[in-house]
Length: 331
Image: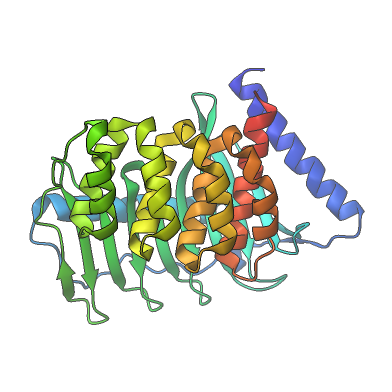
């Protein structure tokens, strides 16, 4: 089956599933253009980074967010968004069109949108393009652009709260703004440290991942990715008992190592249910979906997490379940 056939087949399965749910008495609610969330405009007043490269990266992030907002408006305007009560008790919607696959989650039958994701099919794999979370007032809460690991967070009133991501030349940007629009912290002038890519130095890299500052942790990430599979046991150790920041970074490394992280899946599944950080648990759920078919042993944990009272954990677990099962069906 070629890529186009798989996309069409996937869309058919989704439509069939929705029809079965509707036939079983599940309510389906069609959205109108007027019910599209009122997006926050790109902040007009905020202190701009003084570094031109960082400012350009931020402007690029805003441009991608504008395109994502246009995607959502178009789907509402064309009447494609039909929310239904999913089997996990969450109100959801799926849209499959030639431009991509779109996943929605809502707070309730008539409640506001909580999340919106876009996927595209490339190289016989379904890739997450961006992920948007919303405040309950319909304003964008966070925007994650997977390319370049770029992300921005916004205050409920629409002002920018933070921006992070790579800016080229091995440099990393991490900025935060106060509610007044003034930059409150700036970790953008420190280039990523260069560490050894020799596997014998992995114990030292593990220690730096546990206790280093943010630029150091990103330098460790770069080194561990270069080392590859031998890094996995050391990353898993950090995932199990590091502090919250180190654990979240460990999940990022495992996600980017892809199928090489297969030995870590049992620990990821356990931490998905046990970690005391909601943010880390959401990151783990996303990571498992990115790993694809090799994450099948985590399906029971993801099924349990998909009914979690926290909508972020539930939504990401549901999305990853679909991705893992789809990847497994095409092997």
